[in-house]
Amino acid sequence: MAKEIKEKKPKSKLRKTLEWVFTGLFAALLLFFAGMNIYGNIAARDNYNVPSYFGYSILVVQTDSMEPEYKVNSTVIVKKVNFEEIELGDDLTFFWSEVNYPMTHRVSEIKTPEESGDGHYYFTTHGINKESSQCAGDCTYQTQTFSDNVVIGKVVGNSVFLGGVFNFLTQWYGLLILLLIPAGYLIVTSILDISRALKTDENGEVISANPSLKNKDEVLNNISEEDRKRLKEELLNQMLEEKGIKKDE
Image (cartoon, rainbow, N blue to C red; front, top):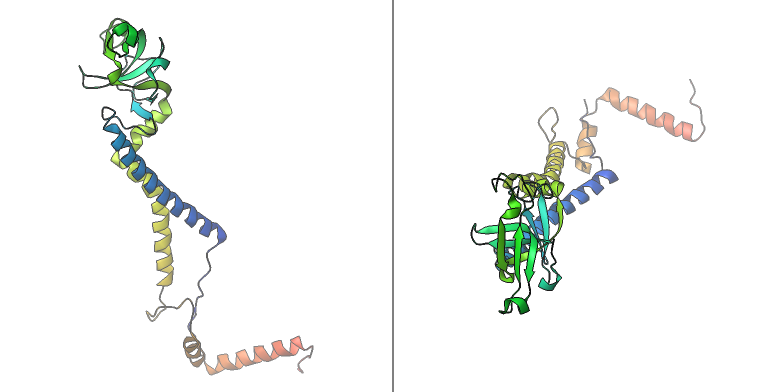
């Protein structure tokens, strides 16, 4: 029996498009996260170890002192602003040395440089939760007063959904899963391509996707005499039909 030579099917436009999209996505994610990580960490040196991206920082809420406005595990988006832009009722994020980490509370009092006499703004803040587990009750009576030196920025937005995403991506497994989505598609399709290319015939010989002339000659040499006669008969009938000649029965 003649060996069957399987020709490799060209990739569809959809598959080519998907491969380009996933390759580009994978490369873009790597470059984006690597670049943002480097940039944010450099900026954090002058921002009390809080990564900053073009004047904005994202922090995850750890305590309930600002609930119900900012829920635990949600995020606040903090922007660096000029101190004269800060008003009563704004929410400030600042580095509180007594606990050695950033804190976000509401401004209840402002002293201007003229009022302080030392050229600095001073802000007094407090929490808003009146039933806080952190404050053992009412956070509105626990205040913090600090100078503009420790101000990280003013809260300009918050999100529970973004908090979940941010928490997920800041974990090593979250970032790994995100990167493996496009990478996984490329790996699987590559394995399938290699598997198809290495399919073997009954004798364990690799079937070429683009057989050479030599392989074709070998196939013809292996055709039985009966198959040769049948092929000649079929070719002759085809030629006669194309010329409009009917073969005599």
